Image (tube, rainbow, N blue to C red; front, side, top):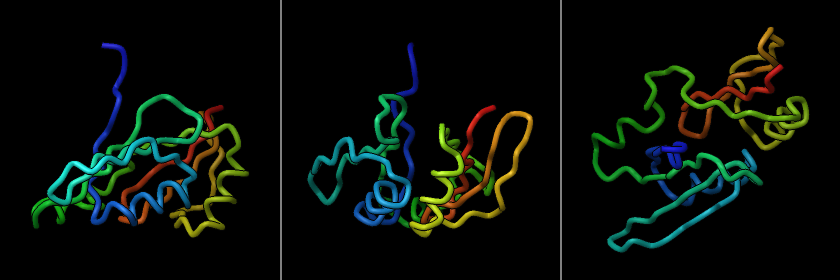
Amino acid sequence: MSHIALVTLVVRDYDEAVSFYTGALGFELVEDTDRGGGTRWVVVRPRGTTGTGLLLARAKDEAQLASVGAQTGGRVGFFLHTEDFAGDHERMRAAGVRFLEEPRHETYGSVAVFEDLYGNRWDLLQPA
């Protein structure tokens, strides 16, 4: 096994999720395939990369809907690396991304926690 290709993120709505991840976060839409019955195979990932992507999966029932935004129990569950922390932080703030703290400069790098549109917590991180 060489790498993890996709991580599933349960969302309320495909289109609002695609809009947030491609607009506010600047990801690229890699695939959006209709699978019939109201389901789609939707993959996004950071622009210009070929690594792990997010499979945006629309919640199908009340149990799945209850997990939207809480898939990691309130902990930071996603780590978005950058080579331009200040620039990406400012661009994301201007796009309406909600940061939960001011940027911190730690021994391991510059970091700030933000929430996606559902409340999932992410680290924006430029490693030292």
